[in-house]
Length: 286
Length: 286
Image 1 (cartoon, each protein chain N blue to C red):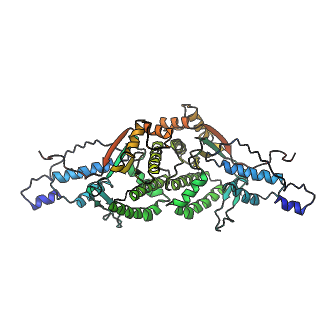
Image 2: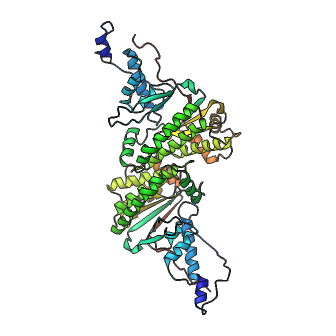
Image 3: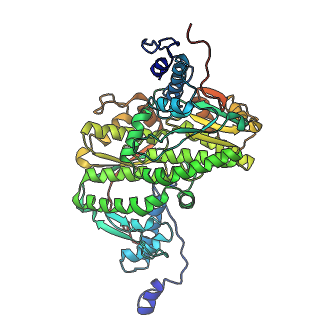
């Protein structure tokens, strides 16, 4: 793409023939099932586009990022992003689109509980291949469950309807892990700490008499728990009190085993919200 | 049924109008997801049939036992038993049938690892109702996966083909737990100890370069591991060496975390084989 620009405009520096030395630094847990490779690839593609002063077309960059990590195609965009499955066999219409900017629903927050930063037994790429190859229930999920959930999720985000958002989020997480378990040999990403997280989220929602917290587990035991800022005390506050073993808990019925599992199993907590995609930190060409 | 016999034959004692005092004793873990209620109900029905000197028709008794616990319908028979789903809405053709007597395949053995004898979070009856009511993937499983597996399993037992038997057993266990996870809220029966058992079984099979051990988890974390007597050393021997922490293990690649989970999590081991159904222990009428 840079070479094309240089051919069209003789005035710009001839960068496209230089080799690149790339130094990548990362403050996010790697190989922990938290899409760090997607974030890294998106950041790399964004940095290259900035270096080469390419047109700021996220759709073009998203297609490039996707070649490094499938889910990186989402990470070029800002705010709420969907990755459309597409219909063509070559995948050319399997692209990400922005559903809404982060400012559309700024209440949305997330706690990430890092359960185990050890390298996963199954990297998500080989995991995916096993799943597609051997699974019994995968077809039902790909053909009917996921497309329906995507439509429902788009509506939930459009309406800023947290109950619908949370319900779909948890249902999809469980359905995904169900299909992982249904491969041969099975892939079991959830562990006892993840089960404890699920229990606490269920207890929080039960106490609130509606869904104010929603867990989701990607390809690992770590959790992302979504909630709205107005429910910070009931959601992130409850996890904070459990992890600090503060007794005066707002939530009843959380048993000692669940508390111990969380206390022993959670090694790091990240509080975050919906972001604005990769940004340029400083000048790249000295 | 006894009343009917008494009407037909005036010579037999008139027992049917007496009230019964039933004392039930049990040496098997209860409420641990090991079908103890099925065993108990089958034993009770068998005892009543013996007391009342009813005709020894397992099919009739099986229908009665099924009213107390669905899976008790299987437990009246000897050896290898299938429970047919049936087609009628009232369930009248949902009956158990014997596939083969125990003597057909006497090599078949089982280790039961009791992981946690605490009462389950969800009793299997309410669990089942939740599953049927809320699940996304259940339909695919009930309509196509299970009937196909039943046919394959009947053939595997007929052919005494352990590899096929083990493959179907593990696949069905995983598929069942996948559907449990896919309810809302999810039912997660498997825990870290179950995962450790799965890993050891995979390592045993991997070392043997074929399936010589097959795990299955019912509605709880406890495991039944099937194997043939000729592979006792490789299967039950491996578990025995792990639980006794004997280092000279036949199986490589079993990591320390897996061993610790098993050592800490398994509270009891039962070695058993395919049985002959409930039998009369002694005289019931003094």
